[in-house]
Image 1 (cartoon, rainbow, N blue to C red):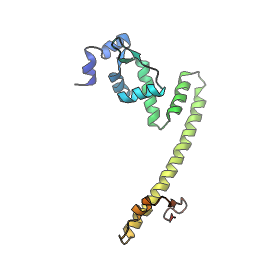
Image 2 (image 1 turned 90 degrees about the vertical axis):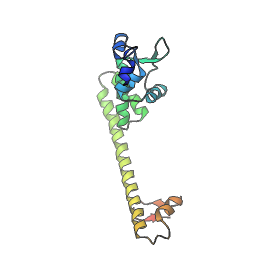
Image 3 (image 1 turned 60 degrees about the vertical axis):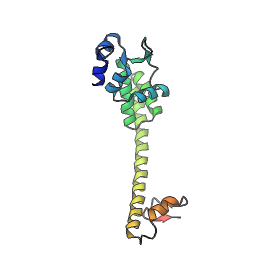
Image 4 (image 1 turned 135 degrees about the vertical axis):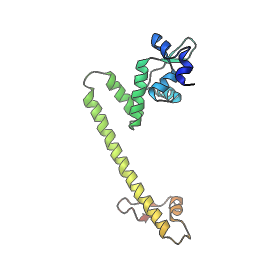
Length: 164
């Protein structure tokens, strides 16, 4: 039985559209977010506190589903919760938001470029360690030795060389 069928008799999509009260399970399915994630977004303040049904359950409307979907997509693109808050404020604000959104996005792109650079360096260091393992006499594993010694640092200029 699907979530849609489970809720259709008492308070499913048909009932929800009449009263604007969509249960959290249906919201989760429509938005692509898990129920716990929706609750987390509420606690984190990027989603307003949900209204409650007469039975005390969280209920939402189509605007909430759209907001949750927006949050999910922004998070998938790597925006932090603070950046999401800023984007939401701009999306709900006046018409001059595009320039500000572009600024936030350009900063985010800089962060992504820095992470890619760091990951590329990490990849080169790990490749060098794997190569040392393959070339070694197997008396000691260079990878285990390197991971065990917190005094070793890696040079980004010479990633095949490990410095102590």
